[in-house]
Length: 421
Ligand SMILES: [Zn+2]
Image 1 (cartoon, rainbow, N blue to C red):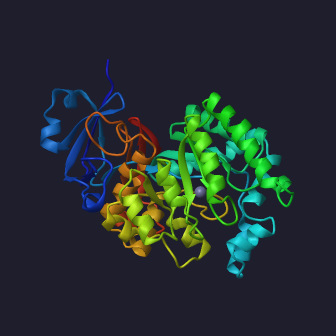
Image 2 (image 1 turned 180 degrees about the horizontal axis):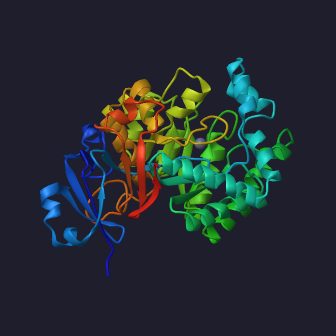
Image 3 (image 1 turned 60 degrees about the vertical axis):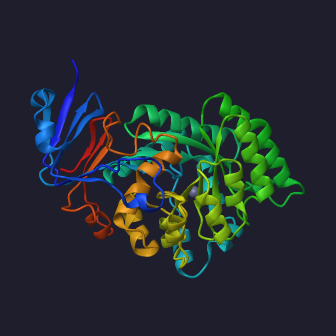
């Protein structure tokens, strides 16, 4: 017997239907059904539309009923850039930054990513898993139903494989979907730094041992690189991403965050799924992205937390026709948040995206960057019933009430995974 659920009483259902990915003007076309209803069968959307139309279906009459009492129904957020597995916060660096130290100075003194690496290597797998579980609960509480998660705080064979195995275990053991990315090229680890040929030796470890092992064991779908002055050059990044691609790992790139390194053109050249950050894009990079299928993933939480004035040029990207997505970049150093609603607020206030554009960027375009847009990312018949219900009267109030979590209920594959008391 099939398992049917009828959701009714929504003042708005934000479907974000239509052609994916959304570029240019279509980013704002989110298809709001006022007073709509939705029928879910076995975790998949079976009908969606005006309440009278959905309710008259014979299956709706037999279905279990969920009345959302005037709230707003959205597709669950797809957070396409997170560093889920980490051992501890870096609150001590937060204070240093407030007192004036910049991110690269802190990194230079062994803080930053290397600080997280040190903490992760001494943590047990159990501790890491418990911490990740708490974060996953918080993601669900804020309306997120799928996340991408990167390794990159291990930076040795054992620790990197341990992180990626945890992605796989957690994906199987709890309701949110986890898409795994290998980020062995996050920075050069301490034991290789300052040694003659240290970076080259570390890169050899990545391309000769780690990438083949990760791919062989199915531990990641994507391979990512931090292409930056303090991390890897464009040439080094190219080497890692090319070898990853040969092993079936699709590229993603941390690009132009603190300076322009040419990472965006490299990403597009290699057919990367996404180039992320993009604060230091050049006009020619914007044109390159606009002509490509590579998603421009913007991470305003990072700029906000670091107190930076320069955000990615979202309006220029949208107007040029690039595929824009939004994500939290949840990580202990530069963006310690699991809240997509706050990312929407930042996108609207700091990058001048409209609430509708921000919603498309955080759902369907993000799903596209993870290669899952045919199954998730919008509320359409035949797609997975991943939803978030918000206690607001209008979808624009989600970013409008900044710093307030208005998520009331989150559902993954038709099952409730979070409900406010
Ligand atoms: Zn990142």
